[in-house]
Amino acid sequence: MLVSQRLPLSVQRSKPSVAGSRASTRRAIAVNAVNPAAGRLYDYIIVGGGSSGCVLANRLTADGKKNVLLLEAGESGEKSTDVSIPAGLTRLFKHPAFDWGLMTGTEKQLLAREIYLARGKALGGSSCTNATLYHRGAASDYDNWGLEGWGSKDVMEYFKKAEDFPDSGNAQVHGTGGLMHVERPRYENPLHDKFFEACKDVGMKHNPDFNDWSRPQTGFGEFQVTQNRGQRADLGRQALTPVLDRPNLKVVTGARSSKIAFEESGGKQITKGVEFLTEVPLGERFHAELAPGGEVLLCAGAIHSPHLLQLSGVGAASTLNEHNIPLVADLAGVGQNLQDHPACLVAERMRTEYYKYSMTDQVYDDKSNLKLNQVLNYMLFRKGPLTSTGCDHGGFMSSTGSGEADLQLRFVPACSLDPDGVVAYTKAGEMKKNQFKWPGGFTIQLLAVRAKSKGSVGLKNSDPFSSPDINVNYFQDPSDMAVLKYGLSMARKICASDHLAQYIDVEECPGSTRTSDDSLEEYIRRTVHSGNALVGTCRMGVDSHDGSVVSAKDMKVHGIEGLRVIDTSVIPTIPGGQTGAPAVMIAERVAALLTR
Image (tube, rainbow, N blue to C red; front, top):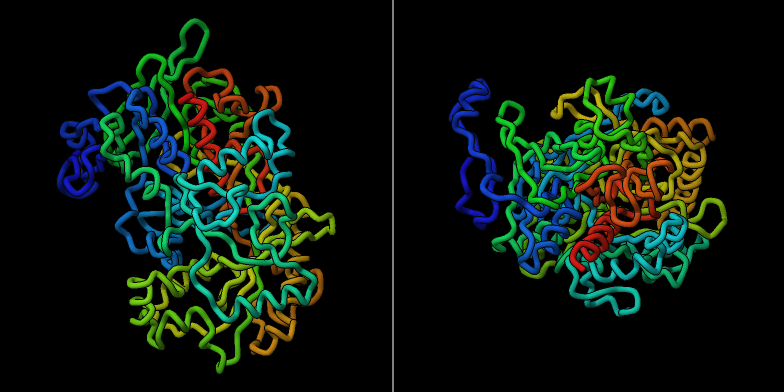
């Protein structure tokens, strides 16, 4: 284990302890390994350096009174242009360094498919790899949770505290000076205006700010983005990097947490620390120890937080017994209640004379090389298509007529050549390698943003390095299928408007021959993909009797002292928008509780 000389000294990054291949013996690794967390007891050990973890590391070390250790399995993405340039999103799905590469099990209801779930593995977590969209949902999302302290008026305070949006023009709704930098999209494409006009043709109204709760969420418009002058404003960059020189903060990257350690005392389970490795899976298991009264703050996200709890003996007793894991706390809710935004799309290929309007044509030449003028436009002025992840214009609709939006439309001025939107982005990132000329067009991605179906995260075995057993369980509730069918119908109506129809050559997806209800349902089941908004698997509530995992008062795990969960896994019901902003809001609210 070496201290990096290219990062601030408070960051330690795992290095091979012994030269050579993985064939090196475990004993050799153990003999030469040095525990990067040794020599200090910690008031807080933060497991997971994603959005929530980075915010907590910043806030909890601000007064210099508490010693904080942050353990992150990934590395820093700050020097990667794939991370910093928003258009680099196409290269980040299944990225070997910055993504966990998670797949669900075989989903029978999805025609025996496995679904890829993009989860960021870096300082900043999924804020390094997501589409940079800033959405809070609606006031009703939080009021409907029915939990004291988490109503819309309560959470608005922390949304504003977390935000830095100096050009919002609405100080009643938006904040300044926070850790989450927000701005309006910098890339304008002629097709954006055509899309907006087509939305008017189907009865939609303009929404100038989807985060203004004084008006309905429905309508069309620009989506605000978590960027800073056209650069991705991930939370590693915004919240953690500026405070790495604090002497009371230690950050260890490449640290895979394998178990939370507990000790029984006086009939109570007391959290003692965290077991982790920096050489996976053969390395020595190190221990980070808490100071008396210290706490572990679990911020590993909606997949890895419940997985680590179960590996540590916190979960349903029957599940833990099945895998011979000693029981610490019988909490049946751990890993249950998984929620997401299932998505499908409509893609239109344009007539060749209009290819010039397509984002891919503006960025790439005929040999799939980046166009120099766009590189210079970005480097010198932070403008143009490289500032965009592609989907920062769109809208929200209600499929039921109730007025509450349950469908999000994300307009992309580029043609998806795969009905799985995530695969399409991956193909775009491989254009150069494959010497492929991407045809011009546009896509409307459709997300069921208040989906009711619930899945689970469990154990395949007791090996901490086995991937979790994930069941997204899309369409368990048939209303989610109805939302996406409605979305396909409305997207086609939008594309049929004179404002867009003039550009279209052929419908690439689903294809004009798919018109019957049965064929559209088959298309959705065959192509549905994740909107990457996973929540709910350690949900907050009143006590363990209501099936919750943590207390809504303070995020403490029921029945255990010194352990809290602070990430999107605590969300009881998914909000109607991307979940990056709620993740930071939750961290800010708990940080305020811990530092008051």
